[in-house]
Image 1 (cartoon, rainbow, N blue to C red):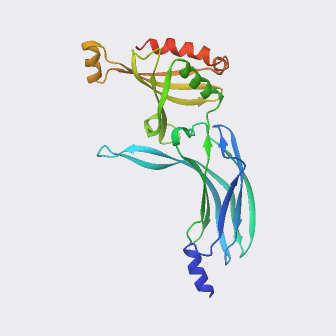
Image 2: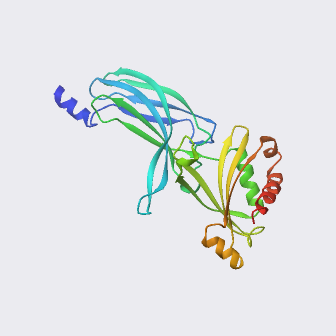
Image 3: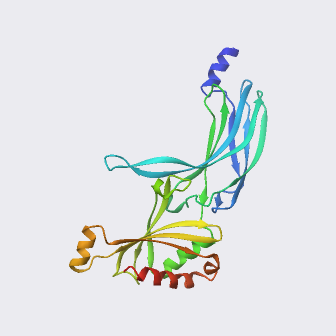
Length: 258
């Protein structure tokens, strides 16, 4: 009977279980998400190597055939506690606090982000628990989003794209693709924006895609010369002046490349 139980536990039947209970499911980058990992013992004694929590998401990467494939990315890993012996029927609750990295993607347009908790159990399938969370923009990003809205840019798409060349902690960047509807409707095809929080400041990477006009414009479009890439950092003091002030600054900046 004992051997039979060990075999079952090794494939996850009658083994220990973990249930993550979050204090709330909405958080902004840079904030802390609290919760409790509830550990329930199984039918036999098991040695728990450690308890860990991952913050994960998905991103797109183009394969050799040009087809985009979906991959899972680890945004952050948190060590909750060291190993311990879990006896049959034992029950533990271990509180934790997860600091959400500034580079964590926002869950706009169905971008998935989740907390995954797992138990490291020797010679057994690790029990895991997965909880979806919502990561919303902080005040600085919201200010710039409001500024773009005032300039008539409509958000069309949000994607996590594989981009290790940016040198960030994650293998991807989150791209916000906007289309102009008023001010720049005749000058631009689209505007892509990457948001990089830098403490009190906010760095933006803009890809400004000009609309083809005349022979020269069509030539630039065919040659890939119709796009300009611009990095700009908006200080926290300017951001706190509000979206209308930032809209004026962005309008002046973008106009230089139209």
